Image (cartoon, rainbow, N blue to C red; front, side):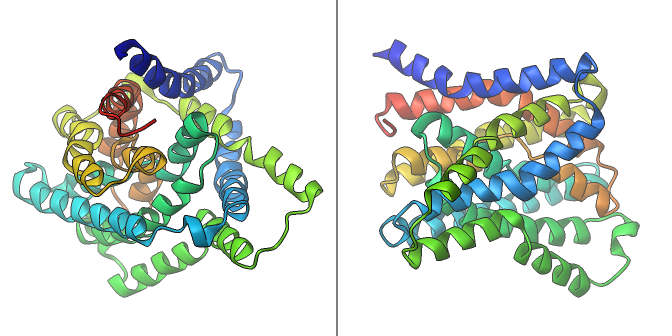
Length: 320
């Protein structure tokens, strides 16, 4: 039933975008301030998301749920995408100053936040996003440092690569998302019971993750102001939302991944470029215009592309 599939896809994606839209409107109406956006961003990153991932994993039988092949697949796909895009960008991007930003923004998805929001929206739990995050997010961060440093303007060259990598590894070891996952794994492996009061408290905090993150993405949406470098922006958007899923989803289906695993992969491959790309590009001495621009276009068009991919996977019987 084609209509069922269209409805399923729209029911999964549209509510998330309506909340982004609300964030955008409230911000335009001066209802939400820059301070709110900054604070909420911090809260989601340091508190709500780690708590949600911890809670989902702590409640799962990790021994049964852990899928090494899947984590490895996420890792390999991420690595292949990054290196492939990097080589192509060095060959074909006319403005070589943009290579670093272009590569980061092509591969780096809002995997943790949107992956969690998506899986919550469709399946009501997000433990598979933890597996996908393990396979991709540490690599996202290390490679972003490597690429933005090697391709950086002169400012980024100051200081040694080793120092920057050290800092990046430290960043990963102290990354709240990964710490939340590690704690959840430990809790589950030790078979600890979750006291009811703690469970309810954690659930309340966890349930803030998606709505708050989506509001903030919407509120931080800069619209036409942020658009620069139209051609590289268009290419990066097409790579991010269409090319990567088209390349790697067939491989995932062929390897037998279905349902939540496939949806988590779809988000890893084809969701919006994460706003932290912009922060990182700026910190490492890049201009940031292209990065901000791609964050805007991917956010705008992912409403259509993600709905399309879900519809396709659902029609082919790969997700239920």
